[in-house]
Structure formats: C-alpha cells, structure tokens
Image 1 (spheres, rainbow, N blue to C red):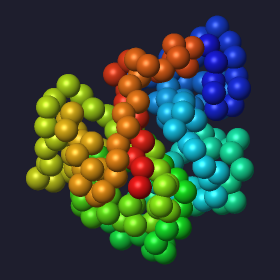
Image 2: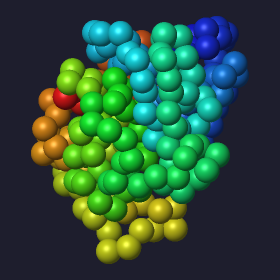
Image 3: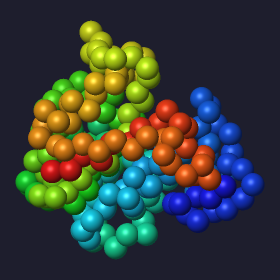
Image 4: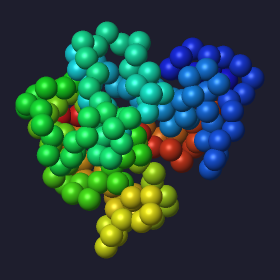
Length: 196
C-alpha cells in the first residue's frame, strides 16, 4: 500500500470506521488519497492559492507538494479548521483562488445553491473545485427540514452533481473503482472536479 500524500509505503493501511483506511504516516483517510489522485489527474495550470473548507490537517497535506503561494482555511463551525465563515457568503474577492477544496462538508451546508455560486465567484477562470460528498445509492438528493445531530442538512443522492452544474461548473466524476488499489480507496467513493 502507498500513500500519495506523504509517501508512506507498507503492507496495509490502518483500519477505520465504515471501511475507511488511514495512513499510518500522515493520518489521511482513503477519501483524501482519492482527492489527491483526482487533483493530480485534473490539474493543468500552476496553482497559486487554495481555499480549504473545513479541512483537517491531513487534508492540507493533499496540496503540500504543490508550489502554492498560500493556503487559506475556513470553517463554518470549527475554528481549529480555519477562520469562521459562511460558505454562502465568502469574504473574498472574485477570481481569488485556483482551487477550492471541500471533503464531506457540503452535506452540512443549508444554502447549498448560494454556496456553490460563491465558490464559482471566488475561483479564477479555469480554476477548479475538488469536492467529495457521501453519495449512497439513492437517486435524488433530499434536504432535511432541520439538520440531524451531526449537522447534515442533505441526504445526498446520485443527482448531486446537478448542484455544481447549476452554479455554472463543468463536472468530471472520479470513481473509486478507477483509483489505484494500492491507495486503499473505497470503490463507492466519488470525487468531483468542478471546473470554472
């Protein structure tokens, strides 16, 4: 097994809840390694600034090998993960970031359409958003009347990429089944690269 984030190599990743596999070197989850793989396959231009939404320290490492001028971290609720800011009301100028990253965050956002328009606004032309959300086998996404105890507003379905397309993004889907098996990615994990 190999970690494409920190370079760790060994016989197996550490087992985690719900089938996720954690890297003993950097603590990255299998979905983080999948996001790194999708980013590497899709990045075309040099990246100058990255906006990371609700990102753990392991997630920040996804982009640590790139020559960024700045990584900016924000969070809707946890100051350990960045400056508190509403994704539906970003306090950044238009065309400020080359990449926006959010992993298992968007299902917690009540005003998802406004948030996607804001992400689109702050991305530079040609920039990309790298998103990963839990997509169980349900055809349609459903908004809850109130968030559950984990703060999930959305039950996400297979039609979720339409949320990105409505904001103006072109969307590439990267299925876990296409990821190298040595990364330990769950087959049902999906990463979306959304390009402005």
